[in-house]
Image 1 (cartoon, chains in turn yellow, purple, cyan):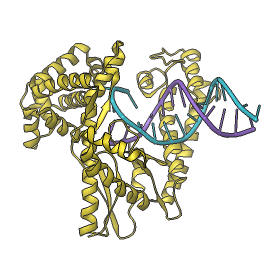
Image 2: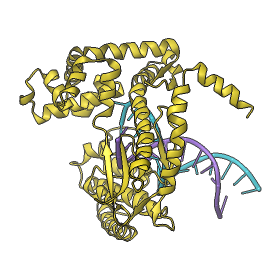
Image 3: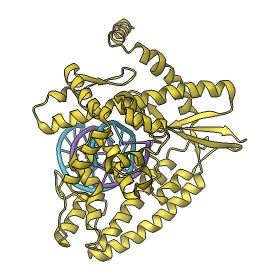
Image 4: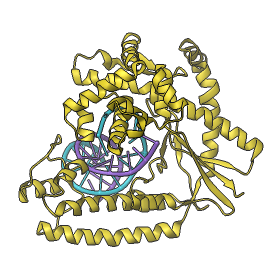
Amino acid sequence: WHLRPVLAGELEKNGMERLYRQIELPLCRVLYRMENRGICIDREQLRQFGDMLSRRISDCETLIFSYSGGEFNINSTRQLGELLFEKLGLPPVKKTKTGYSTNAEVLEKLKNKHPIIPAIMDYRMLTKLKSTYADGLMKEIREDGRIHTTFQNLVTATGRLSSTEPNLQNIPVRTDLGAEIRKMFIPKPGCVLVDADYSQIELRVLAHIAGDDAMRKAFCDHVDIHTATAAQVFGVPVEEVTPLQRRHAKAVNFGIVYGISEFSLAEDIGVSRYEARAYIDNYLNNYRGVKEYMHKVVADAREKGYTETLYGRRRYIPELKSSNFNVRSGAERIALNTPIQGTAADLIKLAMIRVENALNEKYPDAKLLLQVHDELIVECPEG
DNA sequence: TGGATCACGCACG
DNA sequence: CACGTACGTGATCCTG
């Protein structure tokens, strides 16, 4: 309690009273309730899924060892690297600090060079699902048949939440087999799970804080933002945008939010650096507000020493003054991205407080259970 | 022997 | 694997 007046003074001095009183403090009670409620998972289905994975992993091992000409620990990146790049003589694509890189990107490039590669990719996917999810989640099921995560509100640099023991914010969804895990989260009898997610919240936040009229108009007109961007970048009418153009425009939109470089964009969508540069230039000439914002937000942060969200949450970035180019460039991407990611975090926290209160008031049997950065999951009575 | 820590890889938004 | 996270496994260090 000796700290209280000191910290209260700090809050006020930094203009974060509103953030604290209207968001962070009331959010604590919401998070406490969500953790206590937990979410139900189908234990029997999870067990069967784990057994199926065990069988497939075993088949995969047999296949891999038939190609390698002997047993080794496939989980060891060191042993795997020696096999692939020394014994089998495959071309090393990339290095790590300590040896050969064997990550998914490398395997993707090698997958047609040797039949062992696809088998290793399968093995990686299956063992990830088994150890982290099938086995990992099973250990966390409590007596009540539910999984109770812990939400951390004081961990991230941007203001997002994180979730631990277990992490329920990274349940698989992108692959078909992974999505099977997600289906095992079920409502209690008589209820349904309602999943409500924001559409393109980060790009909407960008359009707002950058004050970009073209991007705001696209959202106000309810057009698909990636298609609208493709039309701008490639200079074609909206109706004539091809699926490939849309995919490229989507990558550019993501890249902008992360603080793009032509090099990583080119790598991501498989075009030349020259083409990637042209995409970015076109983009910034059409979204002028975004271009100005990118410069201004970095310059402001360099001057003040921190960058901030719409609600005044700060992130200090001393590396902006580094003499090392890579360190400084990284800091500039952080200065650009943090207000976007952090404002989105502010907004969903505010929404959580309002949803919790509105449900208690009007639908007391409906319960907010989870938050996954841009989505809320509610368990509510059927009908 | 076994706990702590680092490196690596990979699940999500 | 650009921004932000959590976590499992292997390898290595260190302690007692």
